[in-house]
Image (cartoon, rainbow, N blue to C red; front, side, top):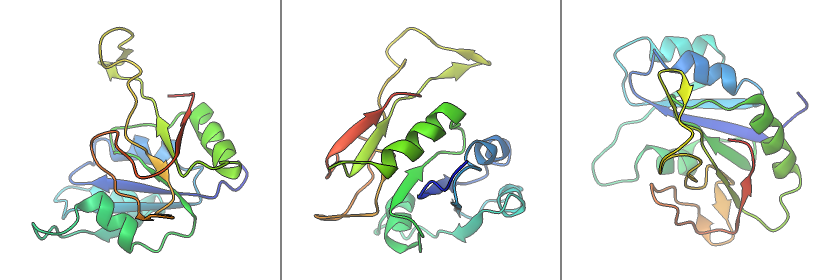
Length: 166
């Protein structure tokens, strides 16, 4: 794949079962940071073997949580950061679409990613969780208003768009 201009952030703790497939799904990205909270399994070994940069995060109880700390402190090489949880996968179609939209973002400063949920290897096609949008998952770490804050709600501080492929 051509250069994407995207860095990937994967926050983890004890994710040795999920991390290998997640890392395979984002190997198209030029830079991958795995931010770990002192895993006691093989998580860091797996991440390092895949070429990811592993950073240890120590939550102090009163400061920013892992994703926001990462956006504020890691030396990302690219303006666009894709946040992927270890149990999530980026399809090749979605990877191509992400690369295309960050090359021509227009006035958007973030993108929502829809998701497909799978249970026991089968896509859940009906119900309230199907195709539900997630909080912005692709955004530059700095916006004209300051740091973009990642929350668990769909509130955002920036103009957003959506990509089609989950």
